[in-house]
Structures are given as C-alpha cells and as structure tokens.
Image 1 (cartoon, rainbow, N blue to C red):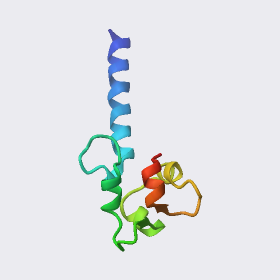
Image 2: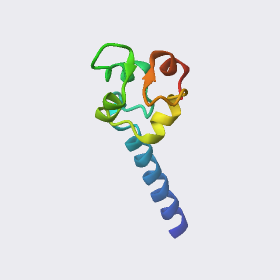
Image 3: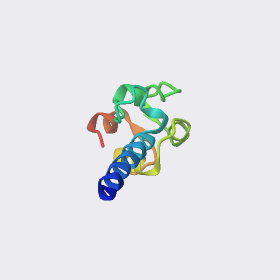
Image 4: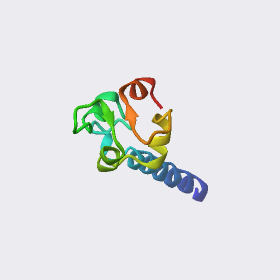
Length: 84
C-alpha cells in the first residue's frame, strides 16, 4: 500500500510540474502552448517574440530552446508554426 501511495504522489507531483512548466503561456490549462497563446504575448505585433516578451510571458529557458531553432534568442512566427 505504501508503494501505491508513493506512486500516486509522484504522479501528482509530475502533473503539477508539467502544468507549472507551461507557465503563464498556457491560458486554457491544457498543458500545451498553442500558437494563439504564444501570439498573445506579442506585444509589439511584429509576429516575433523577443527575449523581453518571452520573459514577460513566463517562458522557461527549456521552452525557448524548444522553439528557437535558429538560436537568436527570439521566436518567430515560422518557429511557432514548426512547433517545439
């Protein structure tokens, strides 16, 4: 029984960590960051998320690496469409 309780606790903690990693970006709470959710962070309207916009929206370093394919520190519309 102790093992089952431990496994359930670990599963719950993992789920919380996954939800937290989506940060402020995941507006609908589905655990994924859609292009529409990303574009909501584009305060300049240039279809590029700058490092400042990414930070303001709560992007983690791992999320930036996942999308920023050309490693320029920003995420363009084409990088958003390509996905992580």
